[in-house]
Image (cartoon, rainbow, N blue to C red; front, side, top):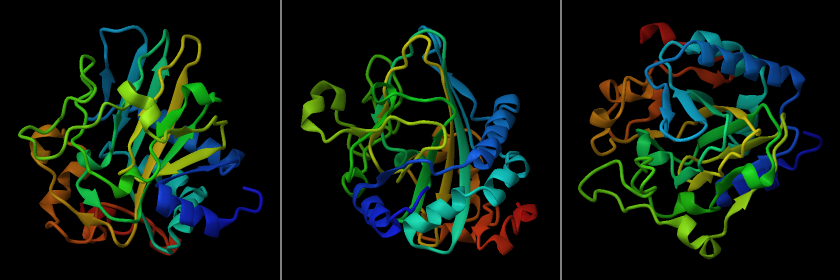
Length: 285
């Protein structure tokens, strides 16, 4: 990025929970990102799934593959991704949480429901970040959308991604408030989005409400999402977590950590910054 104002970006990230960074990744960074994406695409893990398989087009994801860390070492240790996150936090310590890829291909694909990532994850804190990286240009009308500041508001139940009801919760019993129907009253919400080119990144807190616009035919989209945490991140036990999650790498955190314990105490997550400590302790898992 040419001459970034990191102080302003840092304040925006804390306030809004999302920032758009133009030209954040150079050609070498993008090459490493693409290699990581391609590894996940050719090595499906327990989290690989296709949404809305009975509808036109293809919406595919894979995430938190327990075998991904060796393949992701180059992008995590040689690219600027972890440095960018640390600067946004104003922190010197950055750990890798997990990876996720998305494919939207073919005919028109329905939008991704509004949701927060936080209810699905056993982690909470200020220093959390999701880095969203696209390999194709994405017009603003097709882009990911966000509700700025919502990471500081209500933590809602996760969406079950039910095509009949985007707000149907994943956890039963009313343990968390049901998601609002943002699409039914878009004008009432301060929705933001950006047109994105390869090399641009969007970084957001997993507590921010966000959703993906529908994909039009002929506008395939392949994206890589890298997830990071910092020193203040803590383990939190989500409702019925073990019953709702496959054997993702982060799903095993509760085998080592107690509620409120620093997430950095778990040996399975590599410390990326300072770089001298990268990937220490992985063999212990």
